[in-house]
Image 1 (cartoon, rainbow, N blue to C red):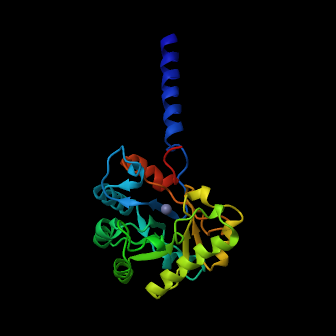
Image 2: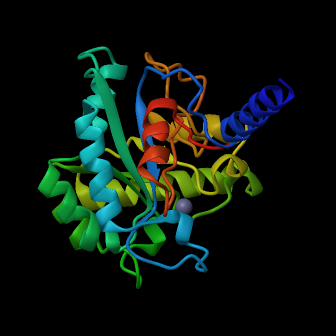
Image 3: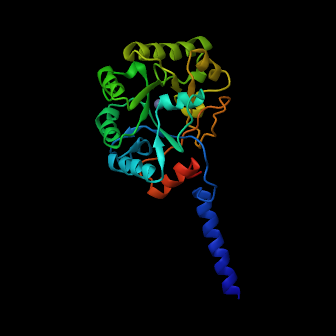
Amino acid sequence: MNALIWTFAALAAVLAAAGCRWQFWRPVKKGFLSLMYHHIGVTDKKDGQFPFTIPPQQFEMQLEMLKKHGFTFIGLRELKAAAEQQKPLPQRPVLLTFDDGYADHFDALFPLLKKHGAKALIFLITDSVGKPGYLTWEQIRQMKQSDLVDFGSHTHTHARLRKLSNEDALKELTLSKRLIEENLQTPCEAFCYPFGSGGFDKRIRPLVFQAGYLFDFSTKPGVNPWPWNSAKTLLRAFPRGGETPTDFYIQITRGKSKF
Ligand SMILES: [Zn+2]
C-alpha cells in the first residue's frame, strides 16, 4: 500500500513539475493569434541570438503545422478590416510578425512565404535599412509588391522609448513612419516596441497613437481576445529556436508554452 501511495506521489510530482514548465494544462484560447519571430537562419546554442533564430526547416514545419490545425494566415489588411468591423476575421487567424528587418527576411523567409502562400508583417528599424545584415529598400519594395508582406515600424534607431522625452520618442515614431510611407507609397499603420515590455509604459503608449499608428505590438505572450480591446497592446506568442513541435503546438493554442 505504501508503495502505491509513493508511486502516486511521484507521478503527481512529475506532472506538477511538467505543468510548471509547459502550459499544456491551460485551456485552448480562442482569439487572434500573432507570432513573434526574429531571424530565420541557423546558429548555435552559444550564440545569444539562438532563441531568436529559427532554422528554415523548423519554420517551414511550423507553417505546415499551422495549416494542418486549420489556421489562416492573415495580413495587416485583414486585421484592419476586422478591427474596423468591415469583415470578420477567419476561423483561426494567425499573423506572423518579424522584428528588426534582417536580410534573412528576404533570403530565407520570403521564399518560404511564397511557397506556402503565408503572409507576414515585418517591423523595420528605418535607420538600419540598407546596413549590413539588414534589408534594403529595394528588397522591401519587392516583398511589398508580392502582397504577402506588410511593413510596420520598430522605431528609427531601435530606441528604448521609455528612456526618451515625449518629444524625442515622437521623433522616433514619426520619422520611421514617414520613411516607410515615402519608400513604399502606402500608409504605415503598425508599430512594435523595441525591448518589449521594458521599452514602453503608460506615458509612451498614447504617443504611438498620436503619431498615427492603429496597432501596437508588444512582446507580451498570449492569444489576443477578439474583438481587440485597444486599451491593451497586441500580444504575441514567441516560438524560440530549438523548440519542439509540442512546444509550438502549445504556443499556437495557448499563446505561451513555458513560464
Ligand atoms: Zn527589435
